Amino acid sequence: MATQKEISIHLGISEPVVRELTKANVLPRNRGGQLDHLDQCRVRYCQHLRDELAQARRDTAKLQRRIDKGAGGPNSAGLRVVGGTDADAQEQVAAPTSPKEQLELIKLQKAIREDQQEAGELAPVVMLEEFARDVGNLVRRNLETLPQRIKTKIPHLRASEVGLINTECVRISDQVADVRSPTDRAATP
Image 1 (cartoon, one colour):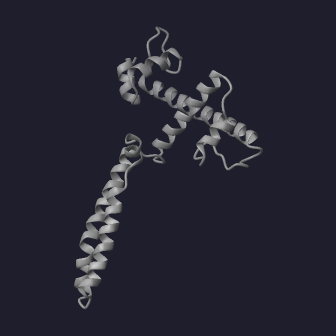
Image 2 (cartoon, helix red, strand yellow; image 1 turned 120 degrees about the vertical axis):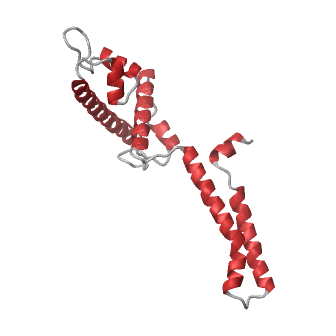
Image 3 (cartoon, helix red, strand yellow; image 1 turned 45 degrees about the vertical axis):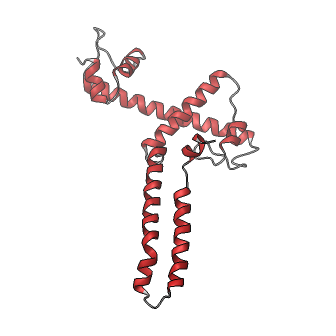
């Protein structure tokens, strides 16, 4: 026998999820109604995940067919369910007609995003912004020292030429410093 807490730790999921899976008869119970051994629960949970993935793939294919049909043929507008380039067009073409379809679409989009994030195809915006900020700082530091490094390597340059290089480096450095993230732009009117 296994407790809900033991199963949640073993499977890496929360206890409320264990309760939901138990109610949905995903996790096996013995004749006394208690949860079975950890190994049996793990096997059933893995099968449940495979079934969910297969269903998500079927739903994705179904949604793609709706998009293709609404767009006038297979991929005629370059729309894809995953990784499309024009989200607004996708929403217009594949707009769900009932609340149930809307909920299914939202669940599907969430599952796709989670799968992409788990596969390393997506990264949190904060992480990307931090990386871009670090790159910008590195570029600015290198631009600040560039005129002097050039003067050291090419000693026959006149002061006016080094001054021109310095002016360009400062201009580019200022542009890098003025770049704002999409979240910064959204926060300021």
